[in-house]
Length: 232
Image (tube, rainbow, N blue to C red):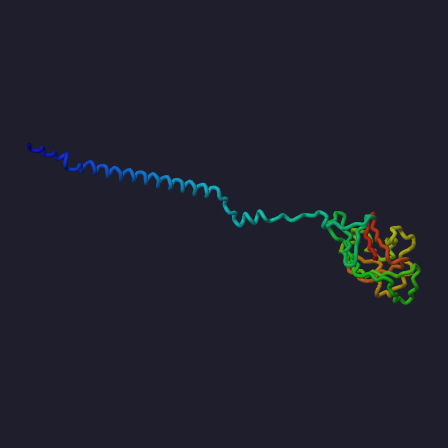
């Protein structure tokens, strides 16, 4: 009995089907790969974005300078003169004292004690011994403005003959004696500070005092105020 010849479908491989399956597999892999790549790219973009946004911007040099610069501390008492418990302005060797106009804007006169000598020696022709115990000398330089007498009514009077000097003992009590004592004849005329310093001039010389001790304070009074010079 003749055998039945196989049909082409039974013997020949289905080329179209196998090829179609192969193409379908490659397309799926490609799609999956593209999706993975897209997801990775998106994740990287998100991470980069978060990283950039979360990093604070570095301050510029100008802003850094502004933040670190401190305002100067203002001390309103820096230019205020130091006063004693008696309300007098305290002065020492080298400190300038001054008389100002009524509005405190114009300096009418000024003077500076440039040296203080304890137990000073006399050189006057008619000098006498100290009446109170100790001669104390102030070396003084002074200057007056051209309109000083017009404003004050008198020349500058800061010599010990002005009657404006007072001596305070170390214990704080006021000495009742005369700070002038025998000092008026102690110095030669050329060395003595002028009794009156007129307007628009300068003057230099020694002011001599005759005091009972050398550790107190000399006060030059001016109305309700004045200046005081500690001797120790």
